[in-house]
Image (cartoon, rainbow, N blue to C red):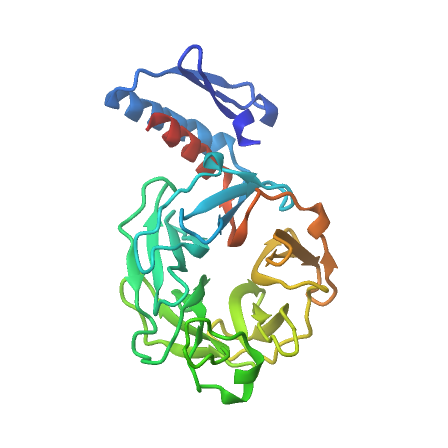
Length: 354
């Protein structure tokens, strides 16, 4: 665990960076007196050492708890199975825009070291939230991106997800929206919209925008229409193929499972959805990642109030490993990503200095 490398000695007001477990004979002890000059000097020394020493990859998981009122939570793992909360499972970022919720946080690490974060700001908002950070502690001013404001009848903007297309050098952000009457053939298959006086049933589709800088966005377009009520799309690349995992939101008859679609280009068009890859439980919020040659797909088993995952080496045969997972208590719909280990060490260091 990270704490074995970086820990605070409360009795002597020191920080110890101990790399002996990594087959190095370095033990650096720094006395701190909290002056800005010392902070800067210590940070320079810390960066110099950690660049050469801490080279493993680690996995982060962004998630929310309860209804998303307190904002962003993060956990880390070295193997994709055991996950430990960061910041004592306290929030990293309190929501300030839209309906002031932070549900379904999607966190992406760009090549320039910037973390980009998008999230669901409320149940019935016509846009999503955005913020960025270099260190997971200090965040840019939050913005509300009104991607569905042009649709007078649009009712929501759920679970925005970030994918970076290396070919076009653009970020694709996709989400689900319900527009009454837009897809009447499947309107009868969804949940009743509680705030609708007409008690219409919701039938979602996946929409998307692209951006290069999170300042200027393309016009919103319909991204995926599989012929059924669909939410929670997440894209990953394998070789020359783009793979989209999504949730079949059909209630009548109940589906509530994760399916897969494929494309030759990141922006589609995507194929017909596969048969379900999840089991006899309701699952949502798929988040895929390759760990070695194995594809892990995490999801929220929301009726069971716990997290689950399936794995595959060929994207055809899937094994459920939900019983092998250890996650922080109360975790809800989130996103997995790979980061260099030094990012977590720097986070602990900056947290101490604050």
